[in-house]
Amino acid sequence: MVFEVTAKDVMGRIGKLHTPHGVVETPALMPVINPNIEFIPPYEMKKYGAEMLITNSYIIYRTKRLRELALKEGVHKLLGVDMPVMTDSGSFQLMVYGDVEITNREIVTFQNEIGSDVVTPLDIPTPPDADRETAINDLEETVRREKEAEKIHHSFSRENLLSVPIQGSTHLDLRKKSSEEANRIQGDVFAIGAVVPLLDSYRFADVARIVLAVKSTVSPARPVHLFGAGHPMIFAIFTALGIDLFDSAAYALFAKDDRYLTPSGTLKLEEIQHFPCSCPVCLKYTPEEMRKLEKSERAHHIAEHNLYVSFEEIRRVKQAIKSNELFELVEMRIRSHPYLIQAWREIRNHFQLLEKHDPSAKRIFFYLGRESLYRPAVKRHQEKVLNIEVEKREIVVSSDLGMRADFYLKPAFGVVPAELMECYPAGHAEMYGDVEDEAYLTAVEGLKKFMEKHRNRRVKLILDERWRRFLNEIQD
Ligand code: GUN
Ligand code: ZN
Image (cartoon, rainbow, N blue to C red; front, side, top):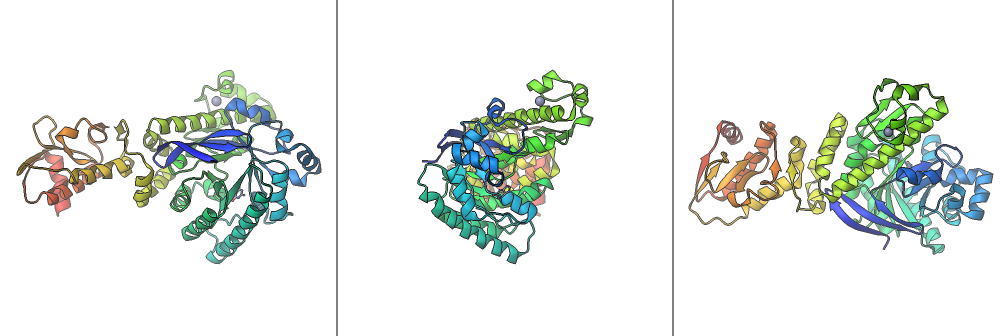
């Protein structure tokens, strides 16, 4: 088995990806190594937390010295590492420059010859907002190349893996079609492509829609890679949407531009007075001292910090999955940018998908704002309450938790049986006083269904002012 899932939360998972060079725990971040540019040496990447790297086979192929070395000794020797190495195909160059001097057959063969752990076909990254006809034509060619890659790859009969890119631009039906085709190809990793322009312009909701379209279609048995996503501010949200692999050139690209990554966004070095980080670099230098360093040394240090903070965030996300607190982490992270909040709200349209993946037993429910209402625990609770057997002819429902009643009212959840007041989720929900109106409205929806269900009984409602107001509002 190539991929096993060992823990789940929201739609995220912790998994083990088996490659010829060892097992990688996911979600994983693969630092991008440019084989032509000496920056952070690949063999040092382990120090920051990397378990797997990604490099570009097209750059290796085009550079005679690198090509010959890679063919003779393999890509791992070329980079000086023994950890797993994924290779990309030159498709990104295709997107940026419009053309590459290589065929799909050549580059897939080459990646196999140099011993890549994960081989990538030369897919066509159709940019966002492309017209439908272009997206369809590009996708047909991508699928043709993936089928060709499948044949070539399997003729090598090695243990290495095949990545199957998913394209379709911003047309969600085409992303789904691409996913269906990918399911039929004997590959090991699904890779969602051509999202870099969307990420660069903070169009996170468009990326979320694409990821949800793909995740609703692809087999859950294989890992999903989000090509070119490497900023720590998006690891929590996209892991929660089901992404298992990220790759980062961001650590280097941002560093060369004096930009300092944090899990809540990017800071310019010139505007930092205090480093909000305790990595070795940030402990050694003050921002003032860092600014005085010579350009290339400065870039190197910022890149180091960027790597430390990126892997720290990956570990934080993994721990959140383990402790079933990924909703809480995501709801915290999305507050660092309005477009992340908007992106997360896309899950409202995918309740069934979420319901299918999110585990139902957790320890605690921290209500952190209206996005907490989208958690399956809320809807699940309301459905469960409707199925509870009630024998009494007269039941008391109270919003005052201090008085005796058969059922109590809680914002978000609505009706909670007295005997479940000590249980997850409603009983274990921690909320602030004076929660948003939406939490009352959601609860009152549940109350209304409950009253309909028990219309043949006498339901005595003891409501405080606020509950009464919302009940009236909804009955009007
Ligand atoms: N890197 C960033 N985007 C892409 C993509 O769409 N395809 C491939 N192969 N690599 C990428
Ligand atoms: Zn730091």
